[in-house]
Amino acid sequence: MKIYFAHPAFTDPQKEFKARFLEAFRFAVEKKHIEKGAPTPEVVDPFDFAPNVEDTSEHRTRYATAIASVCCRLMEDCFVVIAAVDHADTGVAFELGFAYALDIPAILISESRAADKVNAMLGGTSQAAITNVIHGDSMTALVDLVYGFWATKP
Picture 1 (tube, rainbow, N blue to C red):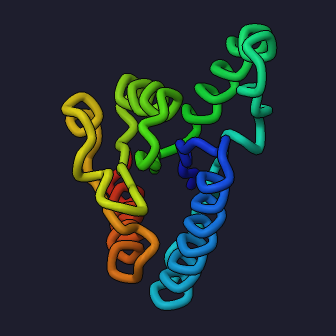
Picture 2: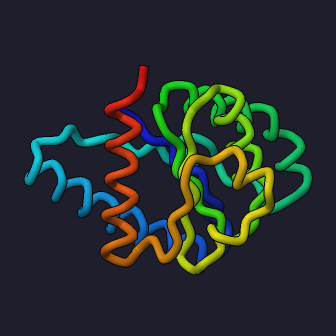
């Protein structure tokens, strides 16, 4: 049971959101596990498998194909994608398109209301959008969606 977490993590605010989100998500999943005996999903973070090469154009050019390949292979083993859309990141947009091509459901999340304001292509290729995701009811809704996709996966 693997979840692909598509997100940017290049700036301090992006890294801080990632840390807060993952902590809150893991807490909510653990709560569901304790209350319902639900399985505990593994969150696949592409930044754990591919280096951040956005520092120079030389690094980006040299490693771009390898990084894209790693991220695509990681996603192929996942049953759902959670995508942070607060920062209009083109990498996240690519990951959402790839998920759509693989028929992997996607859930857009945002710390603000950005998930409600994405362009039509992103909105049209995702199954749900959760705003203010770190807050209690929104996080509970996200976890319920994830388990709903798990229960209905082929």
